[in-house]
Length: 143
Image 1 (cartoon, rainbow, N blue to C red):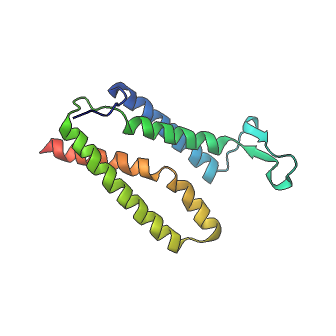
Image 2: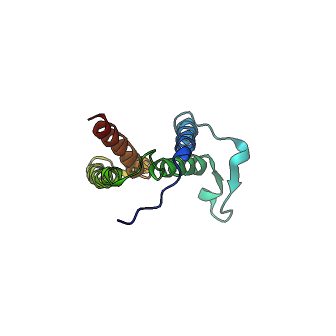
């Protein structure tokens, strides 16, 4: 069976640190309204409602996504067909859970609340995959 190319195992900690840092600054920006002035850029001077943008949101989301991708695509210490099967099952279930939550969100949240929830939906599939993979891997290695 052809193996999927994965990142080295040692990069998993880097991915966890990037994710944690992205969640920290993203939470500070979203809930505490932390917006460093040096990250403010002028985007569309001809449009008065879009003339300045602070890049803290983009940086936080990029760190979260890159970190989760590094964690998701890093090898395990022992990477064999059993682990590949766990990866596949986790991927399938994570997307099923994700789209079920998206479907529920469409009917529960409206207007601005919907767009706020969609921010979380940007990194949910990767987060669900990582959590389900870790749980399945831990459970099956324990037995």
